[in-house]
Image (cartoon, rainbow, N blue to C red; front, side):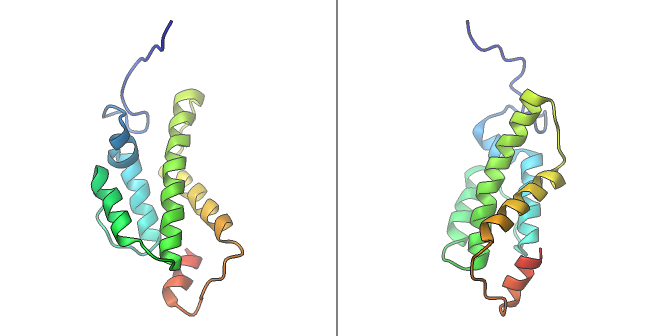
Length: 131
């Protein structure tokens, strides 16, 4: 008895071994998704690898501004949807494009922000809400 594994390759990119850092930080699919999220938030940043990216997030996004709240929700959604996409591909044989996963993350953030008081006078907040 035991678990039979055909390949240790990442099911999102098929290139590297599927280890934690690769799956959540280094995979091209994941890096593209996170980069798209940051672009939507008007955050200019070259996505790093591994723990450097997580350290950047922790360092830069403190406080209670709308941007910080959105980034925190996006990061949680990013991790959750990566895992969901991985399992969908691995166990269901269903593959989605980065844009479709991004759409799910955006919808989750919109739902979570409903009912929050948002200062739309701030142009950055207004831009975030539109995107």
